[in-house]
Image 1 (cartoon, rainbow, N blue to C red):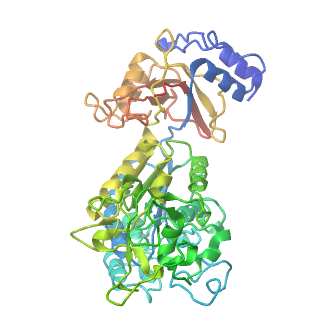
Image 2 (image 1 turned 45 degrees about the vertical axis):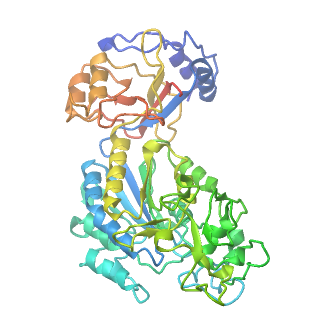
Length: 569
């Protein structure tokens, strides 16, 4: 960015562009930028004049990149849920295909190990927990093997059956790739069968560590710490992360792994709750929570929150990581998991999301002359579980607070939660994710309705910038498109124009905007099937970019920075 260029661009903001009646709002006259101002200073000055300035990068290239990561729980209760995921995947992949994107699809497990150091027994003694005898587990590495080619010696009968059903023919990504991809119509799936190959690699078994760590596993899959996943996550792609788990996150801080110790003690008499009051399967939840009632007793627990004792990694760590990874609108998060304790804080037994503590009948059943210790405590089973499908008892979920706490830090437009206890709705949530991915490709939305100047024009600075610096101030500012062109953007996908899409290669958009120069629209589109809304569900605005030269898409290596003053509710 050359400061003088920026200053000249802003200083001429009031000039009316005569071509096709395209105009730009008068920003410079109302809010002058002093000579020598940096882009950051210019943004600050404009914000002081007009309020919140929304800034989103818009990329209209026809073949956009989409990277899709499935984070799948591999604990012993998951085989029917993995099978259902594979069964529900067909329409999801078909929708992504129809979007015309170049896409990657990868699968990782929730197993990141539990031991303090490599090649050691569980701290501090020699007692191991099946599936957790590891320092790093799968370490967030993408899983490429077909289930039929995995070691199934410890798998349950249900897990083996799920593999046989979903993967009758062994299919794996070709050339040793660790993820599936489709690029300009070419795929690395045998016989181009993306759906069949996904169904083979998604059932990754049910013998993983019971200390499920989906948040840390997802981070490791995307943070480039391992070369195994190289190439999966691409610069400026739309990213979708889909979690499938029936327990809460147990991403233990590395300096607290000593507290993964499988040895436990009876804390009934001392009145204290130390980490080893509970056996390992229950410890992550019990040691992490503080509730109105002691976690060393049976019964419903109310008012539960994380106690901040440092045992688990803070949720903020993962919120920051994903927020820095992608801008709003370029990431979709989904959770097929247990309904949250956040929505049932009083553990109403008639509602999902409750936390009821009971004695594990596989460990101890109280009765005449039998007193069970805190070591036998666990989350309730059956109707005492956080959720249970009354038609198929294989679909149950244990209480969770962290997964929902994480995802609810993000814009509701780009996240979705679905109960893991409702298998018939897995396909629904995948359809929603596919739709939101498609919207992220085709419809770029502002966070609110744009403010306007005295002439009714949106207060926006829009221009092409380098894709590596999408938040930069543009050197050359684009004018607003004509009313005819912007109307076509606003009504694309509405009853009056049902087949039109809010993309510059759509025939309706081309016909309406063909006489315009390179220009932009920032228009509400409430009647469109991709209607832009703010976080309160009120009308926001579509960011439309018209490039006159065919194929009317963002030039290679460029994105358009839309910086608009938006109303904040």
